[in-house]
Length: 243
Image (tube, rainbow, N blue to C red; front, side, top):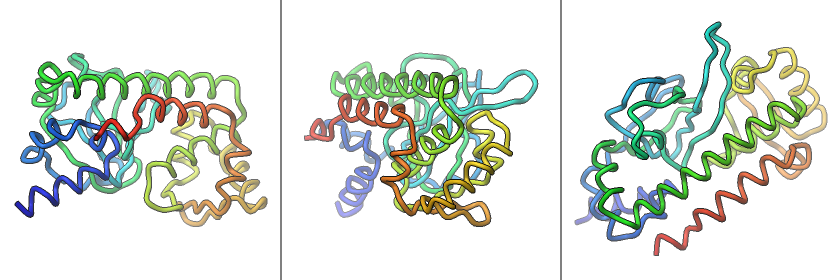
């Protein structure tokens, strides 16, 4: 009995799980497995069907797309707000992206086949998953327009804020090279931007770790893409649905 309650409480650390109707979440308890995810771990590769989907609690994963030449860019960020593997839950045999852990931490994993069957049997589960899928599509759309029309500084600030929203602290493990790969820009551009933000007192950067000192200032430097994506998620998935 105590273990069940502990798992129920732990599941609330993932906002999407917390949004599920209580009667549905109770059926998942014995199947949810808390696992440690390591930096750069590939949770699934493009064009392959995974055995599990992941609901991060303290880990953060990137949905990455790559060119034939090996260049990469992040199209969406998944942390304690959602699930890694949404394409498979909606019936796809494979995804068009890789899912790679960018911040080590914990996640609940569960059989993808089981969750797909739950979606078919429960209107409550289907509603939550479909709403989350819509928010991911919105994030992808915003990422696309941001990468095309906004400055590197705006993109970098947006990405830092997205990471902060999905982590329990104000510190992100992120090198200049990683940030450049995520945004699909040159490393030199990220280095110049990071130094500029540090000189302005917004962040502190040291040995691959970025500490945000002034979140409000960072939001001011970012473009509207961050605020729009956040507002859309809250509109689609209010936590009151979990009641």
